[in-house]
Length: 407
Image (cartoon, rainbow, N blue to C red; front, side, top):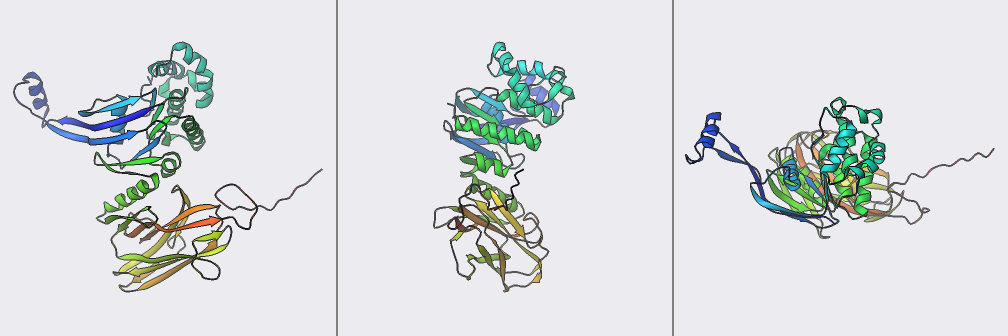
């Protein structure tokens, strides 16, 4: 099984004031340093245990792709070390290693050998690779005529033709069509069950939270935070808001979960509750029972336009349902300091049994990236139980009306 240890890893590039300085440093090595170091990554430390799935997230330029190149050995570190065990398969930059003038079949032969397979093994696996890539006659056409999605299909098919001890995937899967993405993630999940260690870079919140055991947030070339996928994705969203000069704070709830709160504080949620049909606060509710989500907001400054949104998530942080008063065409105009506003959202609890949380957002439009007055994750946690309905599977109650005709 594959494991990974990254110790004090750093990568820097030399920056010269002009090309003559670069030439002078080469010709006169004893003449002193004529460059500055631009650090892309610095002081990166983490381990990935055998069979563990870890997600790497961060904004563009945070150093995610550079980190994967250092781990796979396609780039050399300036400092630190990477230790890995087992057979590693990596899918990094789109089409990396493919020669544009060679056919897909020829590139499969070359890429497979780079992954440690013999020509005989590749020939035996070729029908399966062709079937999974599903690019038809293009397999015998030059790669230069492929679309980006076709390149990704073929690259993923080769990299996963044999189950690796460790699979490293960059954001290349994001260019594929929905059908192939489903196929790809099904294969990744199958590998996980069989013991493959996974390191994945993605902006897909659902993918990180459904596949990974742990997540690492990179910011400015350093590890900003490690934790559960839900905790890290929530903090990542708050970090985006912080770029708009807002504050981010992390609090630990009584149940041990970590809550992220961000925003300017011009409006804040002072109370949130789930009410049963009788108006009583509840923490557990039966499937399909009508409920009211009651959210009380205090306004601390003059706000031209106030919108409240909420998102219901499952225990893994995957989004079940979300909406806001902007989408419902019910924004509040010209709210004043000192106002208390109570919002009530009534709906049937058509969710499957399980634990759920509610995140709230006080904004001016449909997104927190314009004016984020407050973003509060884990504002409320509740449980849905199946006490009166027949058994069913899944995360939603979609009770059908059934008609059967027999001829």
